[in-house]
Amino acid sequence: MRKSLAGTRVREARRKSGMTQKALAEAASISASYLNLIEHNRRAVAGKVLLGIARALSVPVTALTDGAESALLGDLHEAAAHRSDANIETESVDELISRYPGWAGLLAGLYRQSKDQETAIAALSDRLTHDPFLAESLHSMLSNITAIRSTSNILKNIDDIEPEQQSRFHNIIHEESRRLSDAAQALVTYFNHASDQSGGSATPEEELDRFLRQHEYIFPELDNGEADISDILTQESMLNNTESRELAKGFLILYAKDAAQMPLAAFAKTAKECAFNPDILAQQFDADLASIFRRLSGLKRPDIDAPEMGLIVVNAAGRAVLRRPLRNFALPRHGNACPRWPLFQAFTQPDRPITALLDLPGGQQFICLAVAGDIRGKGFGTLPEYQASMLFIASEVLPVVKSWLPATGTAQKIGISCRICPRANCPVRAEPQILASVSEIL
Image (cartoon, rainbow, N blue to C red; front, side, top):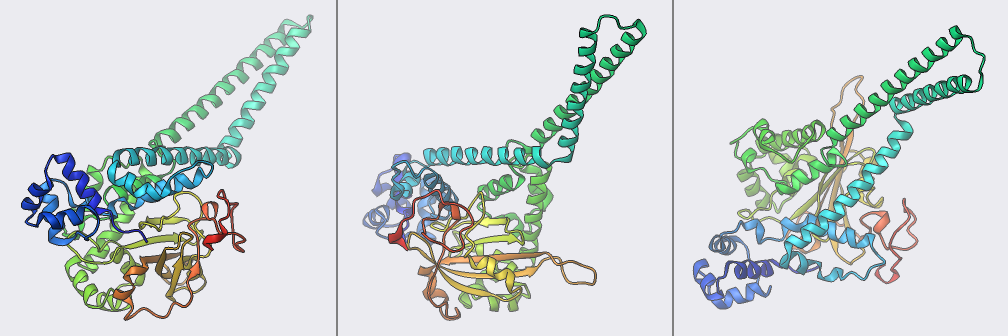
């Protein structure tokens, strides 16, 4: 597992500000030698020291921390995987993000735009194939064109048509032309509406993802009860259509519900006391495990000492409804996730928690907790609506959680998604891989 490069960010921010090491050390109330070790990533930086450095540099704490860039790192790794024919120095991607965040963001943005366009094209192709309105409209237009062509062909090739019959044929051409024009206008209106609704994004889910990453999945105003959901949505300019705003509203409703049921200060205190044990937290706050997972995944903050945890939630069709990636554990933006994830096994055992140790192709290991449950509630005549949640944390955190963690057995070899997974001869591969197999990492 790679070490933190927070020190590199501190060094770059100091250089941009024009401060010397000595000046920054004095402003942050630490020694120059200690700052030198931090800037060369030989000492971790957190808590009051991190806050002091950020204050001295007049930058937000998140600009110096690792967590803010996990999604960007995942995007760049995915972009490199899709260009396996190019000689891309993936081992230097952390340095690229730290030293040139603007360029890194631009490259990731171009990659996301490209994938968005591919998704939009695929969606449009599917719409052209299956949308009943389009099928009916195209059939109608073809019928109009055929009638116009047949009638005009008669008028062109037959000379001795009676005036009354000619008038009839002219009326047919006129009526069919009008219907053709109306059908074409309906199609233009339809596509313009679809374009307006997209707001420049391939899907509403994509807009939601960008919205959450922009806020780092944390909404302090809801934690503190200082704002309501409508205020946040009213001020938000990233959500450009009704569908994405409804998705964001759904997320914020859940966030506010979790914040009310599990107040941040009390939850953080209890979590630290029980070594972040989800079972104890669920009992203490009378909450289901899925809610506990959501709260734990957003617990680590500059002023709260907690392990960094990732989260993914999917519905029964395997579609991700919430993604919070971790550094070195990217979550697929497009396409399905690895079928070997315990997340999908949880659907076969609803309400039964699953614990596993996961081994990624690069050798990184993560502790995983997964559970599936009915989010609609039980009742006569009510069909269940299952969702599965998977919380995952880096194996370095094992000493913190081992007091309650059940035995996980041998690490399960998984990938991120089939298309970029290099594992050879996988018996559950769902899609052809775009990377050559690399047997030495198995």
